[in-house]
Image (cartoon, rainbow, N blue to C red; front, side):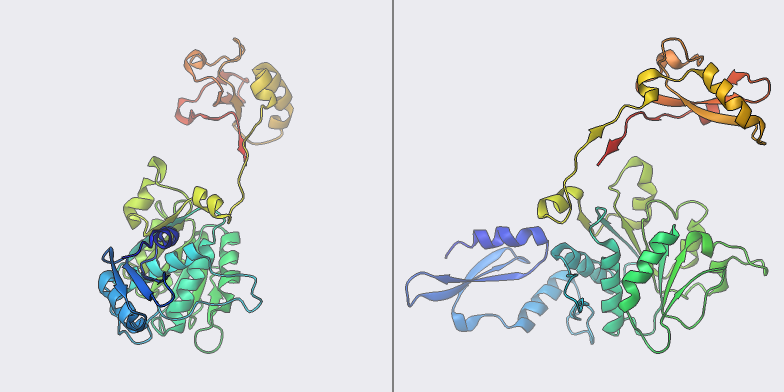
Length: 370
């Protein structure tokens, strides 16, 4: 039995399950196949005429993945969208992410999370998922909502999904001015627009039934959707909700992982750099004048007195370095961490300096610019 270790090592980074078959040539008349099955971690030697047919390999993979192999119009088998100009191609990790998401949908999962570094094409992955689901017929009569927290992200989704055509007429619509157009298949909205309160006392997302959307794609899901706006996601409990994030699991975004569960696919910044899809970065240490010289509160108050007197503000917030050689009046300055800022609230009433413990926080004094 011949070694096929190089072939195995080459195929592992893609995280795809396949039945790897390599052709081994030793003597002129000694031609055969070495098959390594990643689903069983077994290897066997085969004659050239015994190579498994594609149908057999597909059935073997579906059995391992607990999927229905004979499903009519199988979305996993439907071709990816191809850029007519040839400029944009599906990268190997994007293909894996698309397959993982579709597999979860076929299994009936309602909460799906993918974690990919910024710049690796999360919106393009979402587009390919929608493309395969709609064009294969699996989502023939179902609706999709692309949800973001900023207009620029919504516009990015609109541009990326413009190639999807499902049914007649205009299949796509942007949700604006607190109204959800009817009769469309793909919708694009932001939390703010969906949360607008209408004249009828209903918010925008409450204008449609709870089963109106079948798939909700949440871009940058770690940034929003877990406070007041969580009502929007909770409104559609039967919809598949696909969260996309570039932020690995941390204590400050634990709600994201508690809601969606662990990511079904992860592609890190380091992997993107190693694969050549992302540029490497350099860290530049920058010292601001506040770092170097500190902030003189008396001077800041004097310079800001004129501008503040023209406004209706009751207080102004300025950032003060905690270790200013006695120039900072904060009583906790000596115990603060060097190299950080703390907010100092200056009351306009008599210009008396006082510290607001309720708003005290620290922020880095240095910036890492990549």
